Image 1 (spheres, rainbow, N blue to C red):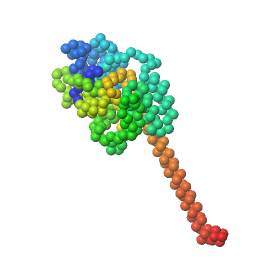
Image 2 (cartoon, helix red, strand yellow):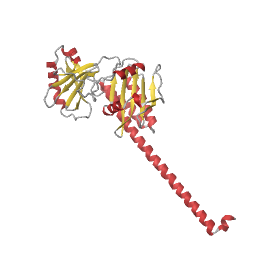
Image 3 (cartoon, one colour):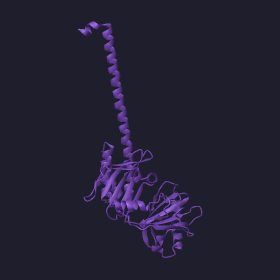
Image 4 (cartoon, helix red, strand yellow):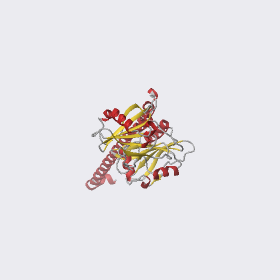
Length: 328
């Protein structure tokens, strides 16, 4: 899972070695931009972007580097540092939407609704509806893991023609421990088309990266053929998963599905990731409130029992000391 040796075809990967300088690996689809011999052009791309990656911290996940014109196309560039390498991921860019950008829609609609909720289920209901509105997926649901890794669907929002999974339970084997760990590390995964053909990634010297390049934090990382077959068997050709991280652990997922291919621009995905972070904070706060309220209820019950016992002791002493008035 961490070293698939390939990416999904809706973007390009370029891996740099900051210590030595220059590109060390890239996806084979760069030929679509630069022709059959992209090495020289990629060296120029690496040189132009290397300075922007200087502040990246190893293992912290992707950071947006904004829009850059590469090979005559305007591409969005994100970058992350992992294992001593810097990985650049480039995708076709959308125009600047200004006040119509998904992040502003998130602030206007989702945040006020989330603030008015009083329980974990209520805030999850809000997020499923808002995630569906932001993305246009046919079905969005919140999926919670238990201590053994089994999953249960808490809430969902769906279009006509989509099966409901409300209250369904799924065994831990559906999302094994290794996959759950990747969800904990990489908080958003998009598969725009389950019928895609993986694009191999190669080292500059021609070696295959299948057993060498860790792509666990790459947004374009190719996924297991078994998972793609699982999606198709569910009647799903596109999916997106957003991690819910509570107290540092994977609490659950916001999972979105579509019957057909469904690409999603970087701006929208980042709004979805922010929504997942807000949901994580809300769940943590609400669970803490529930814990405190339970402690208060327990304390009140304990005090009531002590008071009742004290009253019973006082009554018993009066019966022993002065039985007359109480027995009349």
